[in-house]
Image 1: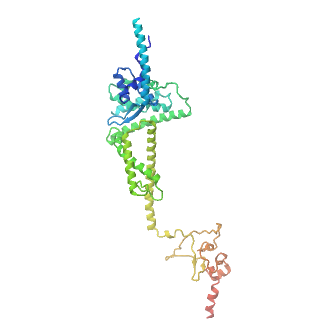
Image 2: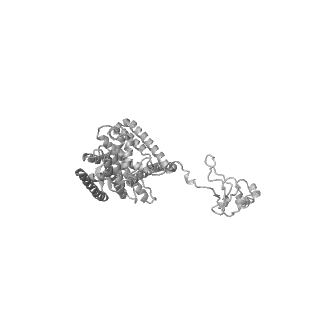
Image 3: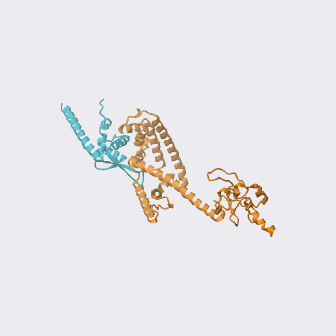
Length: 112
Length: 332
């Protein structure tokens, strides 16, 4: 059996996916998870998103701020900073390059 | 969020914490610091327990640490003395948290809430105001000159205007800070905790200081009104001079009811600080230290017991006086 299942693929690109959903709007952990799932990444794990956010934050790609909420707990929002935007652009290019290679490969195999 | 939700989250976080045991403590704390809030969101969504939605805590922990860039099972640090102590501390912290949580639930109904923390949360703005006052007092305490007592207002420069300014600034600042919520970054949060701890210690110390000062004032009042003898409290010795300015020794003092008057301290030291034996019963204890030198300074210490005893108990100092005093009487 081939090692191509969405969970495995996701591991490589979850950082990029998280940066991408934060591009236009800041979000808190569970909100980000919802955005990823509604975008189609239904298998993405809660712990993975949470852990990824922590790592990206520690890596200096995200800023965070706490928003008090009247009902329920305070929410920690994450936002892309300059380094995060730069990383999103750079990694986005890498992904596009990689994806187009895969596209080409698959198309040729399909033709052959 | 209800009572059981809080419990469920606490239990789940604890499970994840245990499963992350291989990680250094600081890393683990950092990974877990927002997890309760995050899990509360998950639960609020509905659709089953945390266990059902997220799987067992150790699986969650594995996924979390992997995505956060850590490898479980092989500690990033060799567990030395330091990290063993940290691990023990973390275990105790978890235990204390559980005890606190139970106390929170038990004490709640007595206050009319399901949890005591719900009631305490309502008091938060009151704490902000108190914190502002304490901060202003702390600043004033550091700025003022310590010559004048500070009182209960932050009179940094000694005047009430500064006091009101500092007080207003402190309280408004504290409320503003409170409305910001918990700082997201680690160092501001630590700073906040440290500051809070400092203010609490400052408040407790200040409270006892003010309290004992209040008691001391009452004590002074009692002394000055009740005890008229206090003006003599610094009297160490008594020197009696007769009409001719001669020092009398061996003097006994009595009050109107025949009670001996005891003043001073029956000890004698000379100018060099050596103890001098007390030659005469009665005052002065220390004739050598007489403040005024009389016509015959040597009379008292040397004693001259032969003439002294013949003259009688009136005192040795009279030894030369009797001659002219008694002479005219028989002669006249």
